[in-house]
Structure formats: structure tokens, C-alpha cells
Length: 429
Image (tube, rainbow, N blue to C red; front, side, top):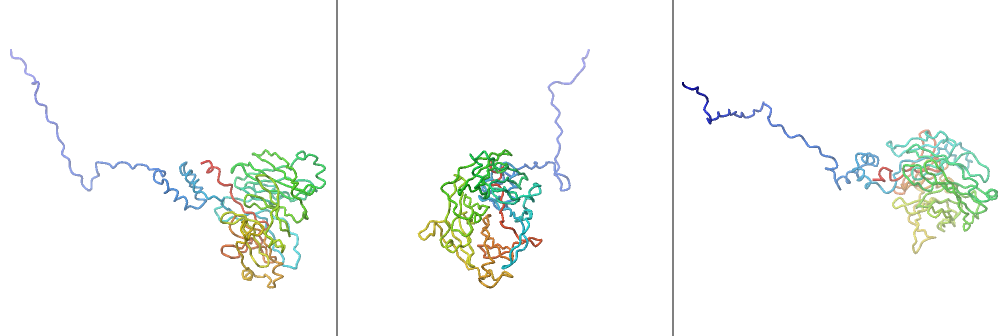
């Protein structure tokens, strides 16, 4: 019986069917997709000197914005910051137009302080965040803070309270007056005490309300200072001993109440005097500094300030239509430690001011140097009675009228305002 036949084992396997590739046509889509693009970070492309060169070309506002991009950009931006704090604008109390001599200047009401920014991109706002600021007057501006004192007169021997504002963060601190217990036998000293003024001494942190304020009075012919240390709302006063080696042998009404910050020290001008009262913040010691004898012998009005290039201590005057700029420098021909750096006749510059008297004596009575710009712009603030307030640029030798849109003049003093420098988020980078 024949068996059934089946498939043979070990036979050839059938050949697989091959597919012929057709060349892609121009109209048909490609079969192979391109690789997806790889994401590159800005820190991988702009590295080292390239990123620094880019950031250095930005304005200060754009530089601070770029620093918020990432941690790497923040570190690089912290190395591109200018050393000097940037000037944002000026605070002052506006005044009505002054009368020309020989008319007696009328008493003017105190207008609220206003801020005049340098550009439209300034981040500051008016002092509307401090409702009681209208009852205070500006006395100092330093390291992003403003110091104000009450406008109401106080009895003799009484020290005022102080209002400190931070316009950048819109915070404020109201400091009580120094307690009487800080000075032993304070009741005896208050009989002869005459309060002079106050100033911002230092700031511990650029973004916190941690600062020091100093105020001083004359106790029995010697200056005495009180220092307030403020740490986020907590205020602690301490009184310093009288400066027995500094004798006050002049009329106290000749001592200006506001100070000038220059070259790391505080200066109070004396009217018709060849000396300036100085306070060293590092030692809290008072002393006198002599002005050039060429100025003090003529009872010239001068102002202490800083050179715009390097911040060196200097003195400026515009007496007798002659601008003189003295720099603190010990040379062979120095005058009380001062060197005459520059001298310029301003008679032709004054001729361009409309309404200014042509007579030499009348012109001298109308012109008064009120300050050097604390913003280190190289400008002098000059008051011309009956003609307004002007700024004189030492670089361009040009006068510029300082007037408000409503016709009011810039008040005196004009406080330059700068941010606390460097900013906190860049200082920690």
C-alpha cells in the first residue's frame, strides 16, 4: 500500500520579494526627514568677552533688565556695572520767581518736594507714598535715601524727629527724636543747646531700610552728635561726647543747616568764613578745614564738591564774574592744601542772560553760587536774582535755565538722587 507523499524536508526556501526603489520626484515629498534642530542656549553662544562687550554697550536700564535673564547673565552684568552710582534725577522744593535787587525778597511758602528725572525711563515716582511728607522738608539725599525734617519750628534745645524715605522701594521710616537719657545731665545741657542739622551717614544694605542718621547741636560752644542706627524699623540712638577740641567761635546763624557729601566726608559751610566744619563718618570726629586763603581773604562765597572725573575734593566759586576751581592737592605752590585747577572769566557768559544787570556792582549783587552738582556732572548751580536759577557746565561752558513747566524755579538746595549701588540682586552675584 502506497504511502502518502508529503513535502520534502530540506528543500530550498522561497526567495523574498524584492522591492525596487523609485527615485523621488520633485513633486513627491522626501522619504527621509531632516533631523530636528537642536536648541542652543544664549549662554552657549554669547560666552566670555563676547557677552561682556554686548552688555557694556547697553544703557543702564537695559543692562539691569538683561541681568534678570538668567544666573549667568547676572554674573556677567555685575562686572559691567559702573563704579559710580547712576544719577536718576533731582529732588527739590520749587520756588516762585525771585525779584531783582534792590527789591527785598518776599517770604515764599514751602511747596511739596518734586522729582525731576533725567529721562522718561526713570523708575521713580513722586513722594505720594508718604502722606505726611508735605509737613517735612528735604535736608539730605544719600545712597538712595532721602532725609526730611519737620517744617514746624521747635523750642530751643529740642531735637526733632526725622523722616527717611526710599523712593525706589516706596518704603519709609519715621525716627523719634533722641531720648534725653542718651546724654548724662541732659537738662543742664539743653539750656545752652542749639540744634544745627542732620545728615544720612551710611547704609548697610542696598535694598533694606538699614541705615544710620547723624544729627548734631552746639552744647555750650562745642558740637555734639547723635547717631541713630535703624534696622528694618528698629531705631537705636546713641550720643557722642562733645568735641572739646573744636571751638565754635562764630555766630551760629552763619552755619548752614544742611551738609554736603564729598570725598567720603560731611561738610557744613560757614558764611563769610575761611573754614568749613567737617565730620568724618569713620571716626565721627569734628574738625575744621581751611579754604584757600585767596578766597577767605576776600570773603568769597565758595562751595565744596567733587571733581566729576575721579571724585576728588574740590572748591568752586564764581565771585566777581570769575570762576575758579580749586582741587585738594599738596603741591609746592598750594594754598592751604589747595591747588588752582582752572580759572575762567564769565562776563561774556553772563551777557547772554536776559535781564541781568550790565553794571558790574549790580551784577555781582545778583549772582550767587548755590551749589556744585552732587551727581558729579561737572555743573555749578547759580542763582541770578530776578533772572532765575541756572546750571553752568564746566565742560561745555554753557548756561542752562532751570525752570519748571508751571513757571516756578528750581529750589535751593537741589538734591541729586542716585540708587543704592550696586543693586542688591547684582551685589550678591
